[in-house]
Amino acid sequence: MKHLIDIHSHILPGVDDGAADYEMSMRMLKCAADDGISAMILTPHDKPGHRHRHFSEMAARMEKLQSMMTEEEIEIDLYMGRELFYRSGILENKGEEQAGTLAGSRYLLVEFNPMEDYGYIRNGIYSLLMKGYYPVLAHVERYQNICAEKSGMSDLIDMGCYMQVNAGSVTGTFGLKTRQFVKHILKRGQVHFIATDAHDLGKRAPRLLACADYISKKYGRDYSRKLFHDNPMDVIRDREIAL
Image (cartoon, rainbow, N blue to C red; front, side, top):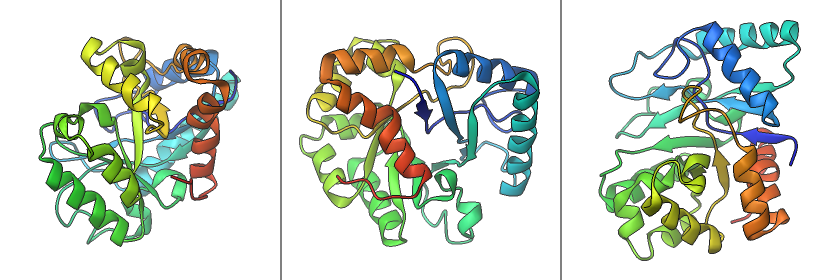
């Protein structure tokens, strides 16, 4: 499968626990291009314990990366976003740009503490919906209380929340239990995006192709295309995805 789109990555240099510098960013981008990725949304962390940089500064770094890629003939379109660690009132003092939505759309990538109560996560998602955002729950397989809640996934999706899973969780990089849960929600059609969540060139490298091929063989080409291209393209174009 070609023209894969990654909506969750930590390739922007020197802003979080992902790429440390431009050299590492370029190596990661070369890896992504070789793996068939044609577009990526850069989603640096916005969370306690991380240095918060102004959105315009991050956009400038992205522009520099895009220029360096042109010189190296790496053909990937880059877009800005954030991975927002949810906490009460987090968006009250942020303008639309500073909110860091995915590619300037209404979609907002949000994460929670992996051990957070289901009710708190549900209320957080609801608050984002009430502000007019389309929440995308990052790496849903990490939240133990969502995984344990029998109707938790269905409830959040019915509210209007989209689910993102990491490619490594599908292929077994993060253990059998995680893979079994992901296979369960894939079978039920409860996954809307599969992304790299790339931080490095090791265990969390920017690769999607093997996962896309697996999804295509196991669950069908149409579902694979939705997860790796059509739904991400709808985010970039700011079109609502049917749930």
